[in-house]
Length: 362
Image (tube, rainbow, N blue to C red; front, side, top):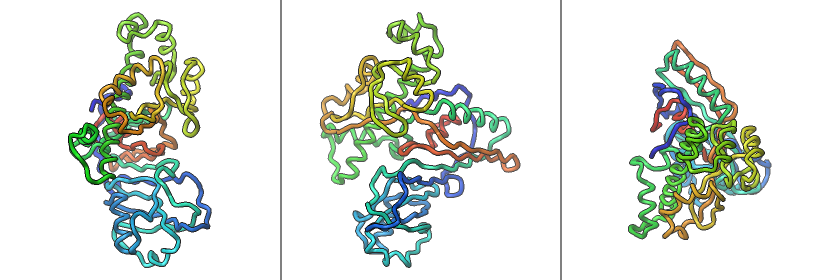
């Protein structure tokens, strides 16, 4: 997949391993838990396990069926992750003596509702990059300053597409009725990988357009892009790297409603202030559509799935995000560059690392 970077620096050579010491993810809940109610909330720390594997262990040890557990987000196997899960309060006694070498219960409380997917505000990441020399450490610091100001493309990470990067192909074959998947959960995941693939292609296209607008003059761009000159002039005046187009489907950031970008002068200023962000299409019959020029570009990536579009619900996803609370330090004696940052739910730390270092496949 051709995911374009937008920062202009050359590649930075670093060593990164998603192990429990060098990669830590902590969930930030969507809301404070009430402290009472029919559901037990556990703050758990796990390593070398997916969320599903962790829940399977809890189920086997306690006898609680997996469907009775709630969780806000699915976490990968690699690294150390801290997340919240829920279970009915009536099972509290069963977990009092719970012990496992890869899982530790850190805290517990109560809440009125079962945790559901998406019930988190963001994720906080700690990353340690190794074998970083002094010159590259300075380049990393400058790149982080740019990311803090201008944000980054909200691509789906490589993890989304499986070890062989072909989950989206399997999803497409399911939609085309060429193959069948008995496990409905797996089927849903593979189809979502196909939607994610098209989203990444669309976002790469928009990043490419933004790079062209920064690099060429108005007359040249009117030929390259076939946009009206008055629109190109407005695009070139935008302060953000990612250029908003007329008809973009926008969203208040990080919470709020969708709306259509009609006034580029007003919306580009709000976008630069991180008040709103453009969204991209995850194809499907129920997804909101862009308008005008923005819709023309979206339509190019929707065409290939027109025959089975009705088999997917679809939605929209932030196209551009910002890392918050960025902290970093360079430990010269160890050649380590340590950084911490917070990303919205559903965004990938590895995508930020790839933009930062201009290396792919983290």
